[in-house]
Length: 334
Image 1 (spheres, one colour):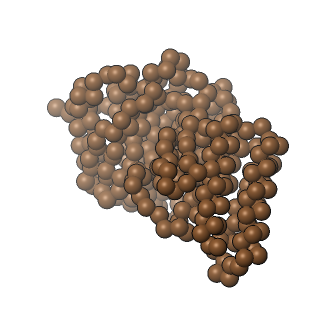
Image 2: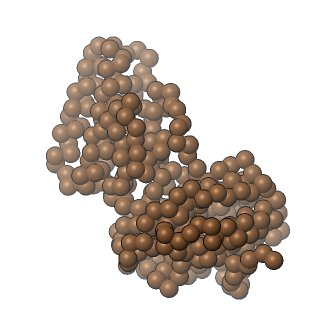
Image 3: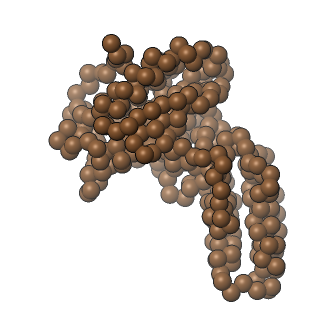
């Protein structure tokens, strides 16, 4: 007998969904739109947002478009809610400390996978990856796509720290994944937990650890990281391609939405201006010694800009290391 995950009895007409013109995407209106427009500074602001948009049922983001495409339009709203509740119920069942034996979850994992497969009619497989202080990570395969399913738990005392965990990470994900924040791994959907609930989770794109880039691809990702208005203080980018990146960075993408910092607005403007300049320089096929020297100077001046702003030391180190890598790319041109 399969494990049931306690789908709630909210009436569908109390849920606000929208579809794009191609009917391939379903959005969780209200809350998601609100959160995408601003960086959530504290848990109090996140709680206020939840009160303001009760019809969202604390869900944020969008189901992957491939999933929506498999759901008949006639019962799309009901099926979307079923998928939402399946993930939320599974997350609540899995809520436990990091030290809990993963083997005890095998029955739950198998039943979750089977139920999702029945709904979407796609190959489905789920495998445990690892645990951290705030959650367990699973690799979820659905059809031909791979995702990371993060189920939150609590190994750090009060999880409502304002920086990591089941409340703040899903609440910050919509803003961190909007246009201009391309340095973060793609976020699909999740649910914000509360003090009374343990149903918080996030679904993001699975990124290969050993992914290799051509120089122009790496340049684009470095520039995206540098110009992002939101950055992580819990990640590490090295200053050279021969030295591995680590700590929540894979393929020059930030994979964790905890410990985020908002880059000072004026500094972000300066960094955007630099990235536009460097992109135009590097991808110009008519490079010469004069504009190469100018690129070196711009890197030097940009490093000095950090002295005029209050910014987290770890974020600053990442930005400086990105500039160092860009400098090495520039040297290779001479």
